Image 1 (tube, rainbow, N blue to C red):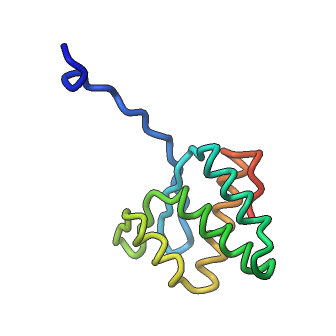
Image 2: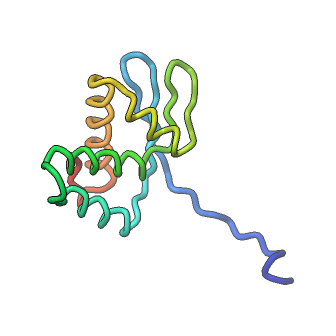
Length: 116
């Protein structure tokens, strides 16, 4: 049997769902590669702009790496580019909720990662 004929089972990272008061659901990946952790740490420590800019970029990077699906008003968003665009278009209350979810998720799954 050749290599192409052998089907390998792909491992899937576990995911967790978080719901807000309005019933929207954000699904986050339960794994974060070492490279992603290092990139996140660099973004958080960046001195390229203001501290606020570094913090915003770090949050976006963490969201980009962890978000798998976001269901808003019953409409699911699953593509990475669309997820990030929706996050960027969200209001301050929604962003605050996402940041809190990211903090909670990191505390549970990645104790070595300091979420903003």
